[in-house]
Length: 141
Image 1 (spheres, helix red, strand yellow):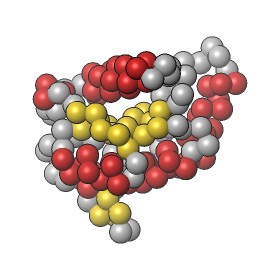
Image 2 (tube, one colour):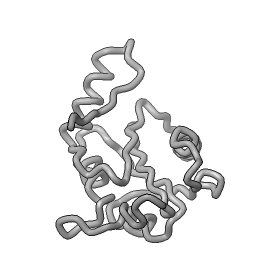
Image 3 (cartoon, helix red, strand yellow):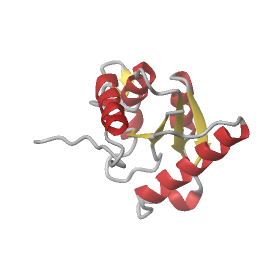
């Protein structure tokens, strides 16, 4: 099973509301969800958030909700702690159905440029190279 986990906090202080800001007719956070949904390898979508609005938008794009604990919703909370929490919830939910996680795709709500092809390339790279434990995208500006 390869789930995709989108992290999106509702209380951004630098740019409030950025994750739900309309871009070309859709909320910003819709784009990574659409990409994961079109991936040949992603089996399930999840959204980890403290925001009802983000949760509802995630549901519109087929994502299951993970309630993020309040201590992981502050401007000082570490992203890796929110990721670990989401991973553990997904792992436990899948285990209830007898499933396991092969890989997990980590998405950020404010990253609209990720594509299904890019996700699939990362998954292929990891499957083809068992010594690798992660693949990340980067942008050069």
